[in-house]
Image (cartoon, rainbow, N blue to C red; front, side, top):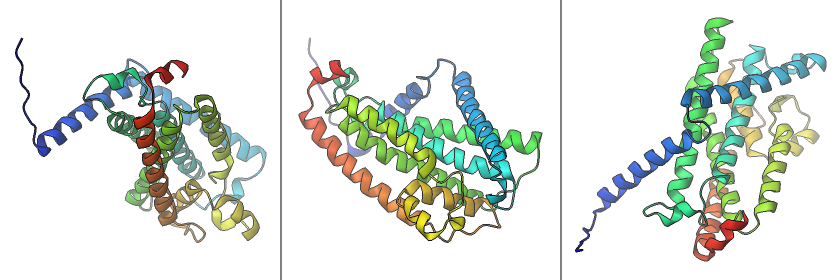
Length: 273
């Protein structure tokens, strides 16, 4: 009958938000499958299938000689890991609960918590997949050496961050044009199969072809990652700083779009999505 509310301090509000993000992240990780091990196995299987496809492609087209000196499968995995991490992050952010979702009716849920939980959940899964595949390959097949593991993982984080930035833009545009945004995400995914540069080295490209790919931040991230992974490769034609600043700019644009959408979105839009 009678109720009262207490005013929370800034620290208490911050911890409450972090707790909400944690529980929402756990829910997001289990959204693909009720069993966390099955969800991890599905992600692992997708990496193995893509690795097998690219391995056969390189063998049939006799492209193995264009790879960097070092472990060939590690060369393929370096491109596949970062590509999948980026694309999966974009899709998970895009599929997160937006301003028109019924979940937004439950306080203190908001789009920031939804995006953060989707991003962190995907990063958790992708990190586990990378560690598990490298462990299996190292112990079961051949010993591998990564020149700078910390730098290589930082490039994985950068590909994830770039995916968050693109995903936030897509999430903000989804209530306005759901079908067009979904089509754009599909085209973006297909285009990055080639323009991400996971099948070749930037140092081996002539200047004319380099201009076709160097606009893509993911191209720079993958090339820089191979510089951290292989001691025999130094990337001259890419820059991780370019990828970082482009990601920050896209994220700022996406946050502005999301703020505008949140202020003007109608709950009735959710029925059309």
